[in-house]
Image (cartoon, rainbow, N blue to C red; front, side):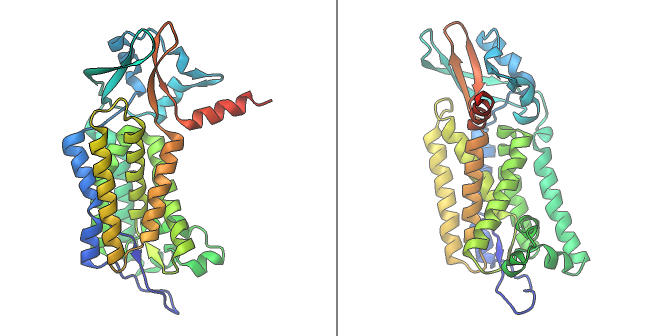
Length: 320
């Protein structure tokens, strides 16, 4: 997985992707997705299954999930995920967390339905590359990250560059990486949050590359690094209710470190873009969530989404 950094040229630079070694090395991030798919199976969702959670744990009502004028249950129809398979920590009578060994599986949709947006993003990247070939490079000329052209007002390049690729190898590695990590993040986050993380990560990646790298760049890997950062935040945030969190975080950290280090030793890799995407994805996930917690108000237990964005919305509404 790698963003292609292209040497500058008096004319528009000819795309020259990462070296084979760089592609293989940076594809280490896809091992994260494979590991998650085969061993972790971490999927957390609420959408149409919230009532089932209440029935399973004896939670009579979810009114506490409503802020003034903002119904989180209704809002979650498009924001929260569609399947749930995680270990919850229950609350005892004093409102303290009590570990539970009971797993809850509340899936109501097929696996294929859980990855619609990932399939769409992969399709867009493939179609964009076909269009690059069909236009004989004109689309690439129009959409790549080229600092001097961005300085002249062609701001769209900060986003379009994330859908361009230097060659078939570059495209295949990024699509494979997206296919590995994307479905897990999509299931954990839900469609709106997933797209928000992906697009913001893409912008953060190209913006960081624009600030710190003069070389033209293209590639979806910055956005993919953002998905990895998002998943890391999800695991870290739910370390109290997910089993084996330390091992998962260690694996994520090792994968990112390996990819970054080899990227520094390889030619044609936009490491600033990768770093920007990683930080952008993690920051977006921290703000938007999900941040699920079982709470106790003295009378009943309820599952609340405590994403910081909700507190900001509530604070604004309470401000005179």
